Image (cartoon, rainbow, N blue to C red; front, side):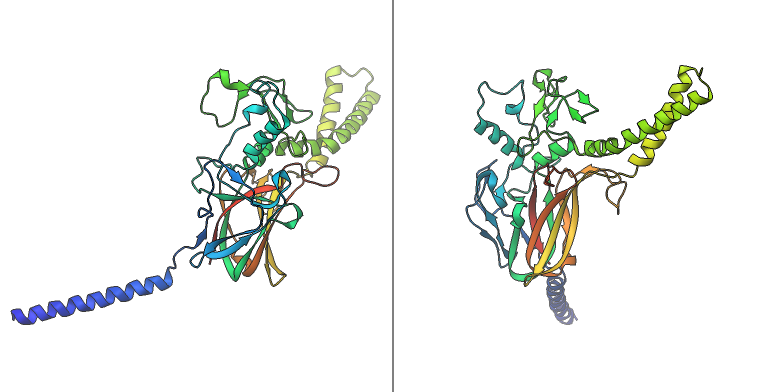
Length: 364
């Protein structure tokens, strides 16, 4: 009896082992190992960035292989740079209170670059190396060694764009509602994301947009657009209402004169201005296969309430990495990135930089 039990036990163990192995094989088939391209295989000094001199290839047989495009050099590059910077505040060197005496133009540009090549995240960035895409000239793209479906990518704002969209080129405690800009000679304020709360580190801060433009915060773009049509309409309606009230009663008390004017002004302003929904920065991701577009995916990097037709209540500036599903593009051999905004100059060019951060490319 003991011998029979012994062989039964051995047989059971063998069957269990076979079953366990079969389950493992089945799991391997159903749950493939995640395949992410994260650029950490590339050598880069800590807290630095690099603009490659030519397109470069990353990935391997497990993750897949892509070739990342770049052209030009310095601030005139187009395509993708490599970075691991994570500076999230206004540059101290561009503050009237903290700038060193005799600061040079080169030093000023270096201070701007400290934000232009930094990813903005809520907490310390943990993704290591990532790409900084500059979308001018349709050069911000990568190609795939083998056509594949991309499950998702991670995108984020640069610190440059985050600060401009949230506060503008100037940041202080004093705000001019007419220009929708903070005042450089205004009351001092704490530099964003600086943990030291000592007033010794309070000041006014500056960060010019490309071309040394004084950009306003994105919410101000909508206010100015509404004022442009709303104020003239309100003034015309208010004057007409006041004239009608005085014609009916020449001795009308000043309080009711103001009331007649203001009521008509506000009604006319709201009717015209309420139709204007402006203020966004958008990233468009387009797939290609054999030179033919397979579709696009759009993601807002910053948006004002009422602008996104699908989500009219959304109002945010992206402050961390966001996963963007690209499976709808299908099989692709090229992925192109472009940026757009309705905050533009007289030539229709974006006021904010045409830059964003990219990481975590996963093939399906």
